[in-house]
Image (cartoon, rainbow, N blue to C red; front, side, top):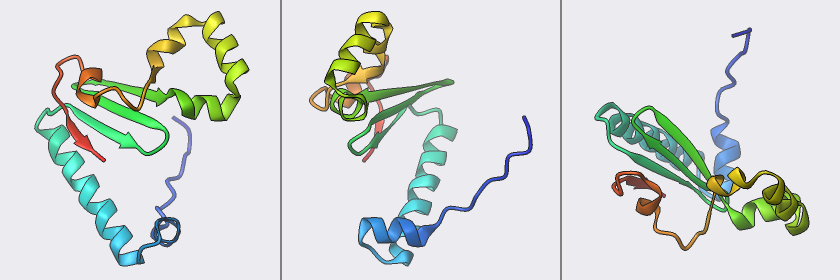
Length: 115
């Protein structure tokens, strides 16, 4: 809805942040996108690990983000996070630990993990 324009990905910014060449960044992003598209097209369950943020789980038509507790704690502060969880306990369903095996976050226990 609305007139939203897509902005092209700036490979040079990604390359700079990752300390790799622009060509390498573009190749990695396109390869990952292609493999992700293939897996989703085949109906595979996928877990995309977002470093220091959490895990994006895609199972069939269900998409769910599980944030690392320490990431949310850095964003909001421990006290604010604890208050929010106390007021809205369902927030716990959106959190995970880095120590939890990614496959255990899936309802099927089987995922293709994209690091």
